[in-house]
Image (cartoon, rainbow, N blue to C red; front, side):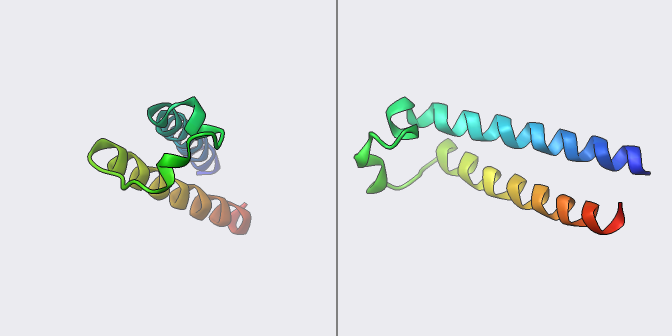
Length: 73
């Protein structure tokens, strides 16, 4: 059971890294480092919005798994 939990944490963390990197790649390097000020005023649509919501969901799953891991292990 413990090994399966560790594997789940590793997979979720890898997925979170991948989704974050895809999100910053879609916005460009200047937006990733704060150089693009026009990104503040526009809305997310389509794939960008889905990727943003997926990032939030995976981050929540990662935090929940981390908290559960502290209690159980």
